[in-house]
Image (cartoon, rainbow, N blue to C red; front, side, top):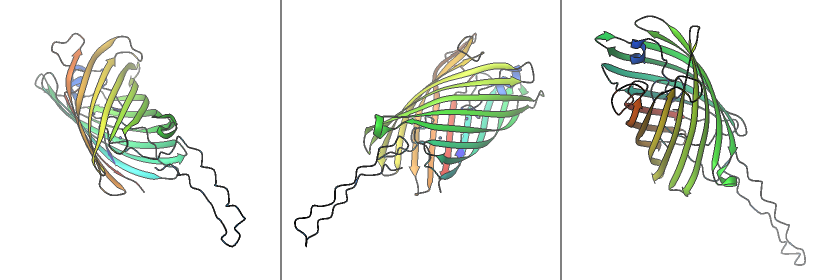
Length: 322
């Protein structure tokens, strides 16, 4: 089960960027490639008979790999592998976001997701989310509660065995409702467009991943405000011992007050470590931490953007496969 907020983690950060409404609201606001084998039989009692010809090797597929890379081995960054056809796995992810310019802002979110291997190369991941923010600005409480749902749809485009690196395209539409303590309940509709890319650098030891993501968000009631968040993330994962991976990543995010790339509101760069443990054949546990190391909010003082983004992000995830 998944503790997330990746695509993206502020609660709903990977899926639902912060909503630009109300001054206080701003504060409230994660298989095997078939091996070729031969069939040969030489009859000892028939020395003149040749052995049967070897069966041709099965065609390589982009959907399976000779060496799998855990998708959660890179921290907040995600690998390109998808669920095998017919498989199912639930996950639970916690996402924490802490730190703001003034006052207090502590966000906590949880995501419960099920991942299905529907057909070769295609994985569907419907999920439910809940979050709350303990915030205070200018001496006034700015707490809020939120809940929502969505579905992550992943399709494998390229495979590492066939093309040298894996590429998966993702569409992630979601909806959430936020209840600020100060009043003014509002809805948010988010569509995440993502590319997950990874590559084996040293078989059995070192792996790399790159994520490109653009989240488009509509916030209402009408007239709906529009915003978007661009994320570029890179990570390395090293298999320390069997089933244990250590990772380091760098992520850059930019927030816009439009669905495109105009009217930039601010940017933030994060760095941090991650840990992944395949505890059993079915159970995997992972954790990651990011801290904002650089950033700038438009029209705000300081070297960090603590208006649109949080200073510290935490993710803890438990996933089980059947």
